[in-house]
Length: 130
Image (cartoon, rainbow, N blue to C red; front, side, top):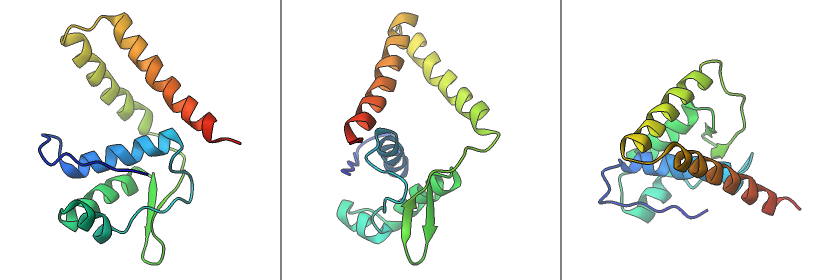
């Protein structure tokens, strides 16, 4: 897995890390049991504070996408979403879709982008399946 951090982005570094790890899970690059780099190692690689990586990992832990263990470190886990996930996710998706419409994209363009992105996740997972 290759992570990229844009130190000049307005998006906080911990959020960039979290988002890229979520995408790697959706792409099938990271699967159940995959280990993530140690926080200090990842922080050193990017020249950032290890607390920033801790924050990203803690978000992922709270979201049920990884488990943290002193022995094994951060490991990807597949857990069933809690009961509030669908409504919270829908609210975030609504805002993102509204932003596209507000910036001039047509409903068809928004739908096509959604379909294309979903298909890219499916395609990448199928490529990895023997």
